[in-house]
Length: 90
Image (tube, rainbow, N blue to C red; front, side, top):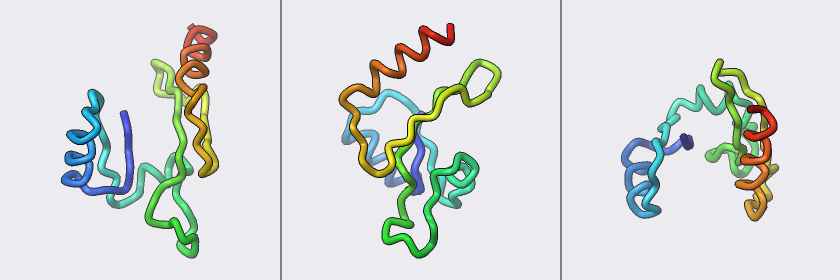
């Protein structure tokens, strides 16, 4: 699942453009982003966008791993890291 502070319409257009096969959450009130700690301070020049992060959530709904990209996403090894962590946690 993906999430951002965009509207449903913006996310629908993005999902169609990128041919995404997973659901997107339109978190326009930012409540989910704030709960997951990816919101930004109001005075941050990027306050309109959440920080990039991924969360590995176990079957009980507990966050097992957090991957915080600290605004410098290097996704080259991310998928493999998640797969390794899934195998480790299984």
